[in-house]
Length: 622
Image 1 (spheres, one colour):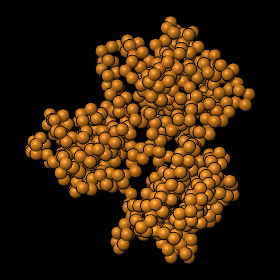
Image 2 (cartoon, helix red, strand yellow):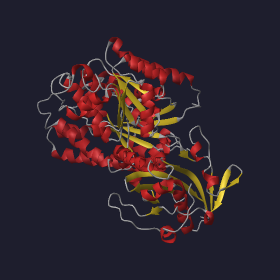
Image 3 (cartoon, helix red, strand yellow):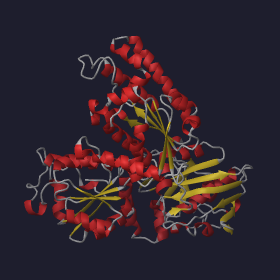
Image 4 (cartoon, one colour):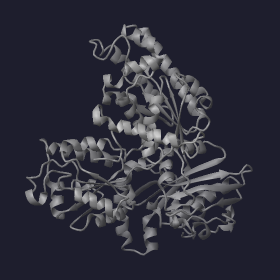
């Protein structure tokens, strides 16, 4: 199974992927001018060790993902100084700053004394780490880009090593205490990401990670094997902050979810259970179930008799996945590409957000040719390799897990119930029966991750499609010159979640609001929620004494649904922009109620607009 990325192994021809990463970066650097014109991402690396050899391994995965990064390395062992004055050390234009440190570089004396059972050394070490966290906090306050901080690996070159008999209560205990304190402290800072160099060291191996000759000569302690995976991890974090994770895994059944062909061997003949190879398929299903808990749809795409497939789900005792875990399915003898399009329609997602997994090379090749936008993954022939292969993928990388992510699968089931109701009624009867409620409020700290998701993945109803990182959104939310609003929607069937975002630029005299961003998730379109969003924005604007709105529509290949939104709601053209007086903005549609939202325990507090307009007002039905 491959996601298009290479992996590093040691020795001989297996070391070729590392050489490819170096060659890829060298070629890219050779093509750059002295001013690095054309780069789209600036990363600063500040380390307690010499980090120049790491650059190529950070850059290569970004190049493979289509980015053109410039990477600047700060002065040797100047972490505190970089945190206090990052512009002088890394340049003013950084988008990402990575702070990388080792215990033996910052706490050398304390670590050696702690190994010798000096209890005071432990306290001194914690105090120094606290100072580092304070410096990182200072950087967070003065830097709007992404910050990545390393979790330090087990120290090397000290008076004791990991194989010492006293390691469990000596060096090992010291390392665990420092890491636990550091990770917990960093967790209190907003928008600071951790890259786990400790895990990289365990993956590569303690001895294989350290290059003593490089360390003593150049203060560069790590081997290429370590640097490869460390750079890959940093690259994954950078990319996860700038692209959407895949939304759906589309699965074959026979020889994919279980071993054998159910139509030939029957329920008792398939390989699934406590013994190998059935145990490997069970572990694969557990991994899939974990993805579902993170909001990834699971779909079945199988050439089979439907009754046979569901019999396995419903009756086989070793099945980890149940029928209720599957959000969509096409189980028949039609071409799989045609069926995959039907699944995408059922789930209302694009095929470029789908990952197709099958054991049949012919089906994989057919899908690649018929629907190249779909990510296709051939299952390893050896079942023992399935879980490890999927664990290496970065397709589902997500930095922030929102409530909407974890509830997405159940939301889709509620949508099926809605559509069944819609089929029996006229549109207006349906809208009245839904009992739509919504809440518009200023974005809070725990909303920022979801806001970033919507801004970076919403295409269909998005006036400007301006993309922003989490850190950029956080700055706007805290700025007196902007208003960042979030819209939550729910009805009698359940919660749609946070489905709308509006970012407003406020004029210096506070009389004019310019709509910088206005978007809605496709799951609430066609229910006049777009009209309600504008009506509630106008209510807030009038409460602040705002006289007028200005907005723009920037057409793209995918946002035609929003093309007539502004004129349909009373905006008048003004050159390339549109204007409307706040007093002329539409009112809330009569079948939608604006209430305060407090999660599952909803306290319904009608707004001023509701008091004036519910239930007799006749709003625009956009």
